[in-house]
Image (cartoon, rainbow, N blue to C red; front, side, top):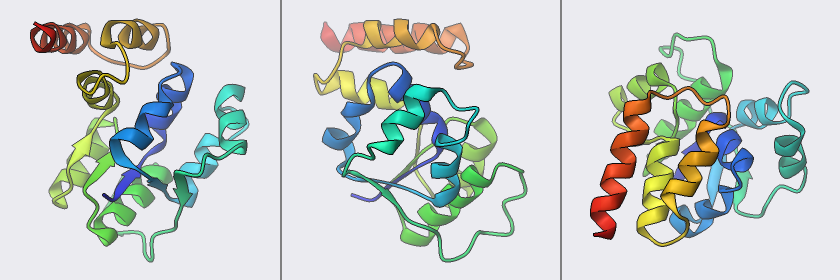
Length: 160
């Protein structure tokens, strides 16, 4: 399985102590250099920079051959991640930003956001969704309360 990630899902998953669900779900995860730079930026929380410094073996930095010039927004991490995912014919791209998700979907890519990652991990018994979402809402992650409520309702139905 080929999965490329933008910085946001990794950033949040590290901060809520749930990043270890990625290898069982996806195997290795590819990130382009711009995403690695965002995760290692001095304004990024130390916990994320420390995690990246130990760079788990399943996280692979790989540059795209070319950045798609038709991706017109400013975030270099999102541009490189979408370009790399499209170039590789990735099975999915992990991305939260609505504009970036739309750009990826316009290129035929499957997008999975942080909530989708957490829901999938919960369905596979890798974490408890209510606890993970509780940790998530204590971060600066911007998400509508209705999305959290819907995820919890789906989880409750799944668990019976």
